[in-house]
Image (cartoon, rainbow, N blue to C red; front, top):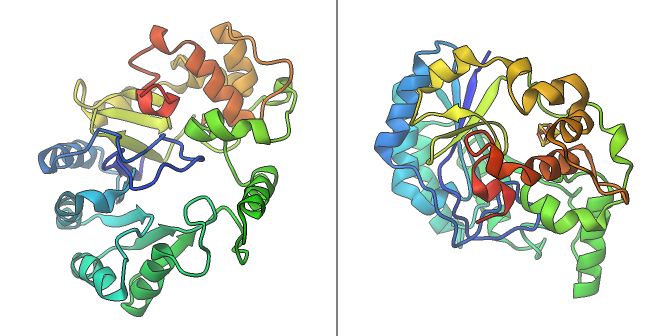
Length: 303
Ligand code: SF4
C-alpha cells in the first residue's frame, strides 16, 4: 500500500556528491512546477492511502518558492510533509532562520539534513550543522542523515581519502547511480552470484514511490512503474503487477543475480560491490531497450 510520495523537486544541487543515487549536480535539469506538483497530489489523493509527502532532490531549497508552494499544497490537503536538504542555505544562523520560518509556519514532520564527510569535508563548521542547530532551536523536527559515525574529520587530503574509504568499506554506501559509477571500485569485490534478493526495497508491496518532474514514477531509483504524465499515478499503482514487471519480476524471483540472467547481462568476473551495484549494472546495460521503465537518464549517469 502506497503511503508516501517523494517529490524529486529538482535534480539540480549545489553539490556533486560521489555517492549520489540520482547523479545530481549544479548543472542538472528537471525541476517541478507548482502546477505539476498539484497534478501529482491530485493523482496520489485518488489512491486514498497516501498520508505523507517528501520534497527532496537534488537540493529542494534551490527552488525555494516552488518548495514552499508544494509544501502549502500538501499541507492544504492534510498531508504530513518532510524535506531532505544539505542545508547549504544556512550561511549564517540569521539566514537559516529566514529560510526555515515559513516552513515552520506551514508545518513539517521531518527535516532531514545531510551532514557527513561526503557532503561536508569540514566537519566542525559547516552549513548543514548550522541548519540543524538553528532548526532545533526553532523547534523544528530536524535530524541528521549521515553515512559516517560523525568523526572529527580529516586534517589533510590523504586522511580525507582514508576516511572516505573507511565509510565505503564499512558498508554504509549503497552502490546506485553515481555511487555505482564512481565509488564501487573502492569497495571489496564480491561474487555476483550471492546477490539473490533485493536487500532494501519491498518490490512486491512498495509503501513509497519517488516521482520526478519528467513524470518518472520510481519504485527504486531508475526503476519505473510508469510515467505520471502519460497515465495518472493512481492508475499506475492499481495496475502494478510486481511479478510481471520487466525488472521487479526477476528481482523478486532471485534478486539482482536473476535480473542479470534474465537481461542477458554478464557481470564482471572480478566481482561487484553489492546487490545494488549488480542491479544497476544489469539495468544500465539494457537501458535503450526499456526507456519507459529504466529512467531517468540521470540515475544511470547518462546525462
Ligand atoms: S537491489 Fe536494485 S531494486 Fe533492490 S534496492 Fe538495490 S538498486 Fe534498488
